[in-house]
Length: 538
Image 1 (cartoon, rainbow, N blue to C red):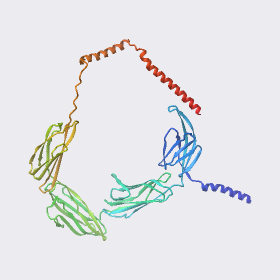
Image 2 (image 1 turned 45 degrees about the vertical axis):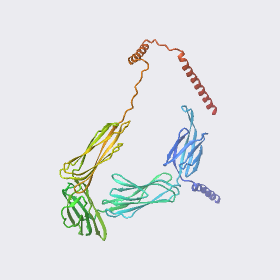
Image 3 (image 1 turned 90 degrees about the horizontal axis):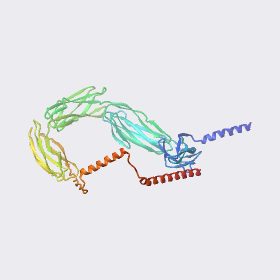
Image 4 (image 1 turned 30 degrees about the horizontal axis):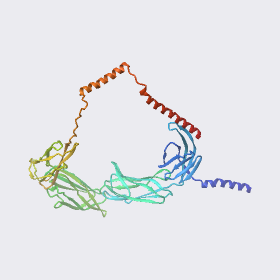
């Protein structure tokens, strides 16, 4: 009985011990490599290279780390967490085109699964509930908890366009029409970590589930993962500000009304507005003192409280005095639940009027070294307004062009002023070349607004072509005689072909035929020698 028990224990040990020390492995490649090919293969996002030695009995394998492993036919080698096996190495066929014997071998590669790694992703959103205009910081830590390097790591976080990314640290971002993407890419060695952060600013009210993703190569394959989900909530402004204009486009000196509605949209609390201000830009005048607002030159302000759902309306009458786009930016600071908040909005007004124009004339093309001139006239197309302190500047990249400056004190409505013609000489060039003449006017409106207009004229200088030397006829043959001779040769050749009366001398063919036969004889001798040599090599 004891003998049977002893044999049973020995049997169990024979089973358990090999399993204990066996390496868990997974096949990541199985294929054939050839002696006549460059065998560079992408396996699990890593490049392995294969070649056969000159004796055609071993496969030389270059690992992604540039280590070289030589594996004999019918055997395996284990190195760098890979088991490399070669079988069926032998002659495949003879390539008659290359006159070369081609060999092939079957290769299998196993990855040792015990040598993998794992990335732990920790992502913290500092504040998940905040208002429009406020910010939150997202801190990310990637930690490699495995015992090999993690490669091709891609961290990605999709951010709705309701947020602006105001700051990035050790990561990058890009945007498209629907969202923004924050990314980090790289590798992490074993037992190391990487931290970075980015800051988001709320632009609109939104509620969304925020989750980042990660992918990386764990030493065997590319794996995917996700962070924990955080719900980010941005409610609408507790204080809603609505701006409207009676007309968002007005002619110079015309009036428009700016209407501002302040509404407490908080359903539970009143709002104390500690400061409401709007500064009217220089291009607009306040036509009449506005109701409820305190005026200090161009600054209008108000303080007060708004009950739940209450709205306060302000009307400001404005008159345009500058031409162009004018922006108004009212701002309100308020207290709710003893917390200070701010709201800022903007609205734009376009003020228009006809402004000075440049009428200039210059030749589009002039010959090399030719004299030319440019005519310039400044026009005021406005039927109402004058413009003053007009500086006209004319310059060009033409060689020796003298920069011209002209001053005009004033141009009344519909008035024009002609500038004296400016003369210049085109440069001497061989090939055609383009030059530019730039006209610029800087001037003021009646309200001292500085305005500017520019114009560019392109001038092409036609280059001098090189003179063609006349052909001297030293033969004494006239053109008619030459033409007749050529025609005669053509007719004679046609008649010769039609008649069939043409012979070639055998002497004229002897040298080419001799060279051809010598080439054929040498080629035959070379092919016989190659065949004899290949057979003897076996």
